[in-house]
Image (cartoon, chains in turn green, orange):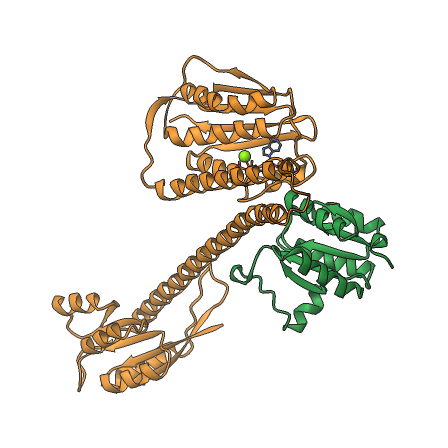
Length: 131
Length: 373
Ligand SMILES: Nc1ncnc2c1ncn2[C@@H]1O[C@H](COP(=O)(O)OP(=O)(O)OP(=O)(O)O)[C@@H](O)[C@H]1O
Ligand SMILES: [Mg+2]
């Protein structure tokens, strides 16, 4: 599969972050679908299967990203999900992958802090897509 | 059922067994609390023995005789205070002297029960002290919950500050990497967006200052007789520069004068927030109508707009801190989601109320009622 046949679904309620992700992913050669809320993303998931999804954690709800990855995985179990967040461990959401119980529930393949460099992001995406 | 542990400290065996007998099957219940209380009774014949028990085991209530063979009851009390042990202490005294009473109360004794006492007197004293312990526990829990809320607020706040920083940093990185070439004009949009996000942060900081003012100012509000209409006119003046950019007309409908006993800063913040929203969430060439009138001993303030409107679900969450309604129509409008929560706090402070009506794509009407003092 070539990059141009790969569609990445991005959900983030920050307009600028969404724009920037769109820019970088297109530059890497991927197609993108953008959603700026949990609600809009849920509607997209109903009709469209992406090859990979990147969800912001906090949108309308504190756990929007969790809910989205749960819903996406239920419908398309093979689609990898990246959860991105601006919150770090200090604020209470601890992104440790040690807790396997929690991981089972959360159902994301990768947790990333926002602000990660685009080339790092590219590498993570390639790993998950086994490119 | 919850069990409280009582320690009886008395050298008279009669008292020790008497307490045991009286309280063995005693149950205390309160209409405001689900769990009933019963009691486990242990005893000590001297102050020294009592301290040993107290340091090895949690004791809820201590019945303490003052005249003991070794150290006196009052010394036991002092020791407990020193070591921060907060069992509730009830002194048992045969001839209560005022001196002792004062000294004991100073050292944290809860109350006194004169010796000899009847079973009934003992029971009613125990019931009292149980209520005291329960209330202490409930208020302690409430304080922790307040801390919890504060923590949540701070973590949301840090998220709200991190998002614009990430966005600006992202654009700066793109410029640094020259992602769209060497020509600066290609970056115009990124620069504009960065400035917009910085303005957003500035707004957030201003809102935070308003919030702290409210929190700390609750005690020293400055109520004065002022003309509300003057404040309203000032609020309009300060929003006009923004309204002009979208060619929005602000129609006002005021009486000459409406005097009320209020804190003018509070009223100003209320007006500013409502007007700012009516302009921000309006369409180009839209209308804002600002009406103030007196009605049944209330000041009725109505601010309506011809803007994007909101759904019923959105209205329900409107007054919560950091609520912003996210959709395509609002995505380019800066804001911190604090304005209305601040406004609500201030309206509450004035014993007022708020009504919101809205229709998507038609507009919104915010009505605030303030009681005239
Ligand atoms: N008149 C209105 N018409 C449509 N939507 C509104 C209106 N007023 C408020 N809203 C919605 O309610 C949300 C909360 O408003 P609020 O004033 O609390 O925050 P804000 O305007 O986003 O930020 P701030 O006032 O702190 O700068 C807004 O983000 C907006 O989506
Ligand atoms: Mg506002």
